[in-house]
Length: 357
Image 1 (cartoon, rainbow, N blue to C red):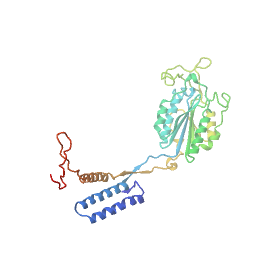
Image 2 (tube, rainbow, N blue to C red; image 1 turned 90 degrees about the vertical axis):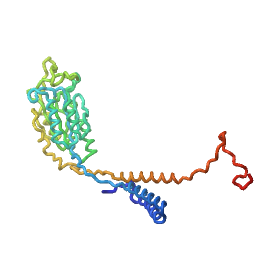
Image 3 (cartoon, rainbow, N blue to C red; image 1 turned 180 degrees about the vertical axis):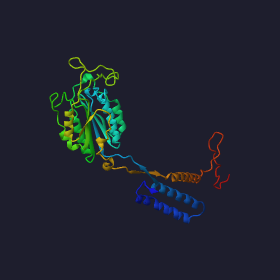
Image 4 (tube, rainbow, N blue to C red; image 1 turned 30 degrees about the vertical axis):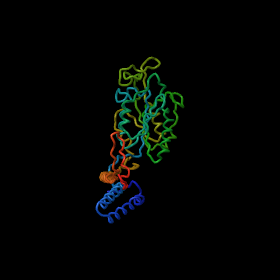
């Protein structure tokens, strides 16, 4: 049992102690009904004072473990990520979907954020502890609409990722930031480069990145890509026509592991080639959630107030007090009889004054 006190203790004593002293003095100096009245009033003061002290029973709850790990997923969803050379003839984005979910399961106590890039980079999921939101996004991710394609640019998310990581470092400098980039490495229209040439460097972000990986999808032989017009009947996993090249033949997309390894080196993280749904635990095995947790698993104390019985008693005592006060209201004077016309009858001259009638 503990006291949570609605008011500071000193203020409670100043208000209620004089009232209790008055009630005790009246109880000792009165008798009969008057003494009973002061017993009731003393009980009213006492019940009110107990409510002001707010007795409560502490309850201990186990709070979920939330670490200071922040995981940033940067997903390439350009048309080439629909190439069907993952795990046989599956689309590369299907591998991304599986790995996104697996990484959140491997780090269940982290915070997650998703950036996606195609012809532009957009924030798909602000930083959240809800791993279900990552799964929901992964289940519905699609390639960009074919007609809007502006080519693959591995450096396209650089500006958005820079802004995101700098903001995170300013808000929570003590947090651990892991960056995972999912791409096939194609760079056919780099924002700061010639098509197929070098891409803008991510090296300036290396101090802001504590770990993660670049995950590469696709094969050297490459694969064809289904066209996508924004409807459910098109895109990977459907029978939609393949995207064609300038000769009218199905286009072929090949992984560029050189670009992916360069990107990983610039960020100071590992590169891994993902061709099947292999475990991802090794990508986060160096991150000990229990060790780097900002709070760790901890006990959360809540309180269950137990002043309600005194509130009931107080209500009954106040009702009793009101009833007694009503009974003590002076009765009005005797009413005069009325005449037949409704006016009060006039008393005889001299009545009540010793006059002669």
